[in-house]
Length: 183
Image (tube, rainbow, N blue to C red; front, side):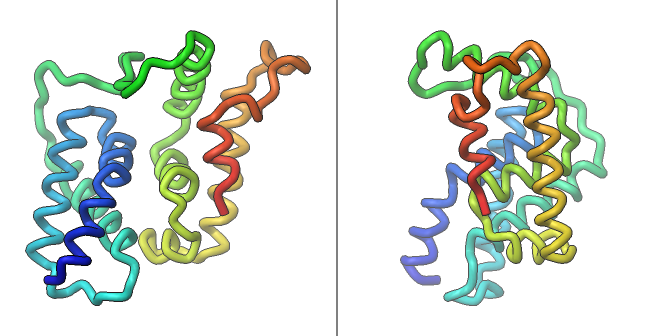
């Protein structure tokens, strides 16, 4: 195993953590999922071909492991969920930013899991559509149309009738800009 691969895995950790949190909606379960993913990847590193997309390989391992774990019911006591309305923020933002983030997260969490997953992979993680298609074992065109429909649903949930005036434009939301700008 080369030092470059280990270094690249380290740089992928924040993205893996974000994706794990979107899948589990629980901080401690997300951390466990990231750890399990990295352990599995390191155990199977000999099957990874250097020069190919390590990010897609790691995200596929995570998604497959998560799906396998979902089939096993596990009780959890005292978990800290994203649904609680409390979000971990590194640096506190201005009040308006906090309100907008909560509104955005509320809308995002109303989307179904597959829409959330696609928006995280395409928008936040900026994984190319063909890679997502390979990860999900569907056609690239299907990924494109599903991402477009998910973005439309998110915009509809996020910018409701109360916010459709000129002073409240969708482009003012920093997270929506990231999700809307992915290709």
